[in-house]
Length: 251
Image (tube, rainbow, N blue to C red; front, side, top):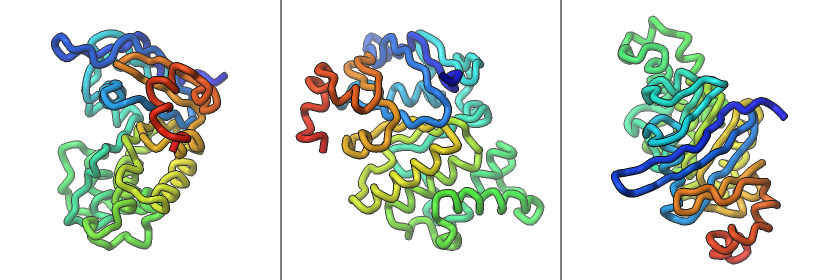
């Protein structure tokens, strides 16, 4: 077995007297796709926020490539190799597709110097173009971002994350609001990206998760109740009771 890229031990998160996450321990191998599922209020978003540095854990530790990230400021996570997309599309709608990615590349290169004359930083154009090619948006390079189809906007958000060259990519409901064809395209993109990096995703589309994931974690009331392959999770009676049984045929 490969050494884990990411390991969390006894991670918890409290908001005052409310326990949103409690005692979660798990490790994640390189170049695998792991889905995090559970009913509404299970703690999925809190777990993602802790893993991406948005929230510090109240208890426990997070180690990335052996380095303890507990207490590390959020802006350092992307420089260490952890990038994230959000459930709500987060782009500059009035900039072009290429400009969206290039601004992200420049911000990553120099955090407080995103407005330097682009002619002085030609390598960032190449980096932006490479990210767009990776997500299949090269032909839309000059289009205004707000005019892209919904699925293309989600792909653009992933391209923005890719300019940081992350080893760990966190995707928060990447197919939210998509129809069957856009979902199919996003699944193909995630499979392609997983060849070179570790991917964690939160999703609600069970057929997609069961077909895409190498591994599934199930949260319920802030606790990890199951961790295994899609086949293991499908057969777990407790998972079926609290979550999967609510979805007829895992639709």
